[in-house]
Image (tube, rainbow, N blue to C red; front, top):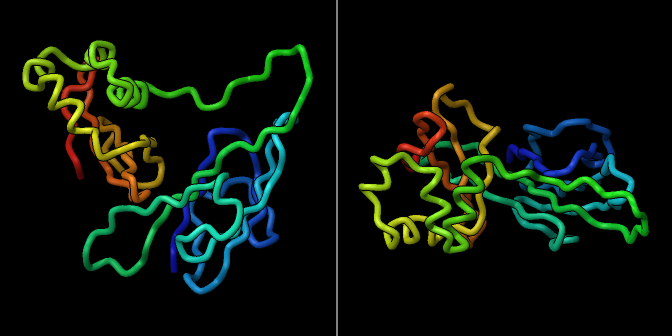
Length: 191
């Protein structure tokens, strides 16, 4: 059995193998049974679509979905994965401004500043003590193996620690604790 956590950055509801669900935070399916996820966006300028997933492999509409594996701990039998859905746009000619989707939060903005090489901007999010410990090369190298950052709303954590999943090139999610001190990143520890 695989426990899927379904995530999108736009408001929508889902059909999972034909059954309507409003949220799909933890859904269990067999590895041998295909999972059909139909995305029904709640915004008129997005189009619905269906993806087919077998195990952790996307069989249909792979350009619209990523299946992200968790970095499994040894000795655990059940597996978890995140189905991360992309918006599918419709051509819409309208003068009204269309709302944007995912606003990146504090840690995600920091991550993407590092990835874009804007280290000066990234350091604005760090405490002085962390800046003194890490040089530019080390900061860039720390995140070099990851291409995507996603807030972990799927596992339990302490109230004073923010957990984020850093996704590598193989679409494996690696959890990291981001410790904050006065709204600045004071430490980053891989779990």
